[in-house]
Every structure is written in C-alpha cells, then in structure tokens.
Length: 391
Image (spheres, rainbow, N blue to C red):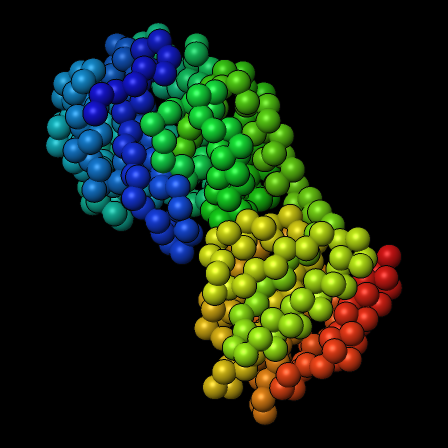
C-alpha cells in the first residue's frame, strides 16, 4: 500500500476497489479506483480523498511518504462520498488542515454530509499558493453535481479533473501509457454515457473554460491518468459533448414467448436493409449501463415489451427509467411489442420515450399474439418506408 510517484513531488495516494460491480445502477464490471493526490511543498496538499470503506488504504499510502499530521491543505473537488467519504477520517489525522471547496455549493454539500468542517470557499479565478506550486480553481457546476470543480496546478501543468475524463476501471497501472488503452477508452466512454451525458452542455462549457490552460497530465478522480493520449481523450469529449449522432440503431427489448423478440429481428432487418448499423440488446442479457453506452451516439432507438399484468415488462420499465435520466440528445424512436388481449405496454413504452427528448419514427407498433411471416414483413416494410421518407 505504498504511494506512487506520478510527478516531481506529486504522489498518487488513492485506493483501488477491485470488487465493486454496481454504482447507482451502473454496472462497473472492471471495478474502479478512487484517486487522491498528495503534493509535497511548503504546505503539504492533498487533492481529494476516497470512499470511506478504503480510508485505511489511503492513510497507509500517505504514511509511506509523510505523516498525515503534516497535511496543511485538502482540496475537495467534489463532495460525493466516493470522493470525500474519507475526509472526516483524514481530518482527524491532519487536524491543522483546511479544506478548500467551491463556494457555495461545495461548502453546503460537505456540511450536509459531515457537519461543521474547516472549509474555505473558492470560486473560478481564485488561486492558492502552497510554495513552489500554485493551484488555480475552475468551477464546473453540474459536471455532474452543482459543487464540482477542477483545479490546475503549476508549474507541472497538471489538471486535477474530478469526474471529467474518468473511468470506472480498477488497475495496478496509473497511466494511459502503461494500461490497456482500448479498454481505458471503452471505459471512458461508458463513464461519460452513464455519469456525465445528461450534462453535456455544462461539460462543453467546462472544456472551454480549461481550453486555454497548458496541460501536461490529466488526473481524474477515477481510473488512470492521461499523459500521451490527452489530445485523444479531449477530442472524444468534444464529440460527445457536441451530441454528435451516428447512423446507427439500438433495439432494446424483453420478451416472454419470443413474439416481441421476433418483432425486434424484423426491425433489425429493416435497419440493415437501409444501410444502418444495428445493435440488438435483450434486457435479460444486457445491463442497462452497457445499453446506454451503445445508445449514446445512435440516431435511432427502438424499445419493445410484451404486456404483463397490464404493464410493460419490469426490465423494460427499469431501462426506460434509467434512459430518461441519462439521455443527452434527441433520437428517433420506435415503440413496439406483442400482447395477448390488453396490449397496454406498447403505449406505455411510447409515452415514456416521448418524455426522453425523442421523436417517434412510427406510431406504436402493436402485434397480437404470435406474428406471422406476413406480419413481420409488414413491420419491416413500415420501418423501411418511414426511414426512406425522412431522407
């Protein structure tokens, strides 16, 4: 549990959570890290802490460099407990430290979680000298909480970027250059889709706010640090925050006796015949967070459910609730499903999607009982006709 030196006088002292598999409904199949950074200077500075269950691991890493009672400054970029959970614990070991958080939201949130703390409020443009190093603070509200901020440290030009550019990715490596880069980029996209996506406009403004800064390293709160591949991750964030859509379709469904599944395949045929790439997601097999990642840049989404007890299937209801909270751009949608006698689910899916900034490509596609080949050909034909009509 030793600290890792990442730059002259800068150490990673965070914690690795190898086993976490769920983060508010987001499936974290690769685990995560809670990153904290220790800067040695005239004023010993700690940037962020970790989740409270791993606070002893963090303390051990700090002690491998200095005694924690020497810490003078703690910068809290975000009050969410996976970032700040160990803050009261660390303050007990660093009684002279002052906490710096964005004003007023950071002060309010830290007080709400932990009571009376020695918090100093800062705003965009404020600077803090700790000796040879100086921190410049930039408030980034709603990326992804009101209290979020980032800080830029000179002369190393390190951006401590909080949730921006992060990944839920547990690894013994700390840099993009010694990690599995395709996996890191995949997890960065999934992180954006499931955490940051609803706040794309705010994230775009945050990118603009830091665009004038010289950056040699990006140190996020989760995952690995960016060094060689900074231009690549910045370019991807530019595309994601712009809400660019690809000519792709994602078909999401659950099925009881395969009728809705057969309808999903008819939709697949229609999209493919129109030259549009398709991803099928059976919600019995796919996690919501992976579906959201697939759907983030897709132009089309189709959601299907049979009717169960006058309602849509629970998996579909769960997905639509998750999708509503995360959708970041308008899509064309199709609501579809089979039924035996009531058929209420299809309209419920349709109504839910209209609340998600989406526009219908077709009226609700309803199918009584088991679809025949003729029924499936008609469904595919109607979709093809609707797609051709919008060209």
